[in-house]
Length: 219
Ligand SMILES: [Zn+2]
Image 1 (cartoon, rainbow, N blue to C red):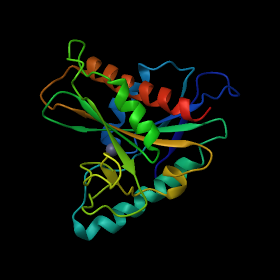
Image 2 (cartoon, rainbow, N blue to C red):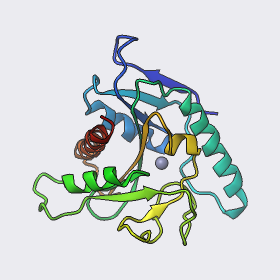
Image 3 (tube, rainbow, N blue to C red):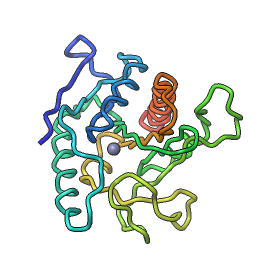
Image 4 (cartoon, rainbow, N blue to C red):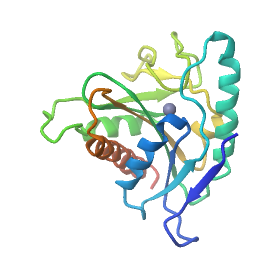
C-alpha cells in the first residue's frame, strides 16, 4: 500500500494549520506537486503519497476491491494528520475539454458557499461571471445516482440546498471528522492545453481559497 512521505517546511515543530495531500491517485501526483510549489510553505504541510492508487475506475467486478484500497489508503493518511492540522485539503485532478474548472467537496455547506462567492477565475482575463469553481456537498446518504468513485460527476442537488451531493468512498473519520475539516479539491484541466504553469497557479488559487474559507469557520 502507499508509502507516505511527509515533507515539512524545515522546522519539525512548526506545523501549518493546513495539510495538503497530493498523489492519492498516482497519475495526479505531478500536478499536485506543481500546485504545492505555488503555495506558501509556511501555510501548508505537504503529504505526498509516494505510491498512490490508480485513478482509473474499474469495471463493476473490481469495484469492491477498488473501494477497499481507497479506504485503506485514507486510513493511513489519518495517521499523518496531527492536532495542529485544522484542515485537510485532498487534491485531485481530472480532464475537461473546456477551460480549467474545479469542484470543491466538503460536508460543510458554509465552506461551499464561501468558496463559490470568492469567484476564483481560471484565466487572468476571464469574465467575473465565469463560474470556475463548483461546490459539492459530501453526505452520508447515497445520492439517487451514484458515481463509481469519490470524485467525478456528482448526482442531483440535495433537497434544501443547491449543491450536488456525493457519498464519499473514504472513511467517515476522514471526511466528517471532529478535529479537522476535510476538503476534497478536483481540478479539471483541458487535455489540449499544455500551459502547466497557468494550470498550477489556478490549482493553487483554488486551494488557497478553500483554505482561507475553511479558516473562517474554524476560528
Ligand atoms: Zn484523483
